Length: 219
Image (cartoon, rainbow, N blue to C red; front, side, top):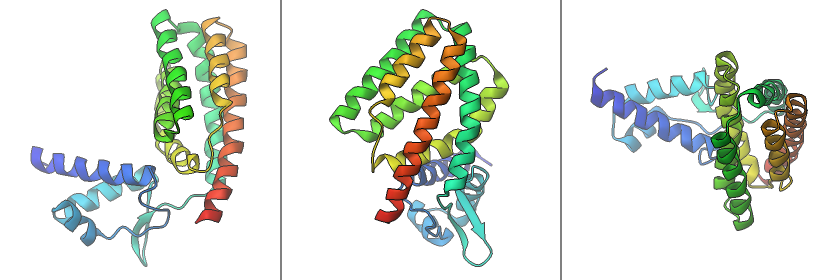
């Protein structure tokens, strides 16, 4: 694949992925290769390659009768994903308490402050962004390559659910929980940091499921 073709493929892949994550392409919406090829002024080959990559990320599903479609939202998938996330991010918080440095603390504190400000201003997309960065940074601070890799595999799905359900509510108490998690990590209280992170993610799950139910009603 030459540079131009690779750049086009990446542009198509990233554009479709962003539209799915942010809900511009709806769950179960058909993804017609010809229509997408016309939209991006390209052949169907980079479209097909992009859709196959998105299938591996579980954002696109192929069905023999209709072809590609946006993967449906599913409560059981959310529950299983958050069970894994609770364990992994709880461990990440525990490990982060061993590795955090002063600059890490300031960066995490900034994400909390900005997230709260964006929430108060009603900029939910920015809230999701800062929330995601807070959690990503703690995962990276674990210094555990296997844990980081496993979280990378589910992060896209987590952000998708977060974007879609944020339209029907976002937990304002989450910022205080972030602050408590950060203080425990900074105090190097690994047990407390792990416990608070697990509780935080469980509360997130309950909120997302509630938002998911409302989202289905609105559909």
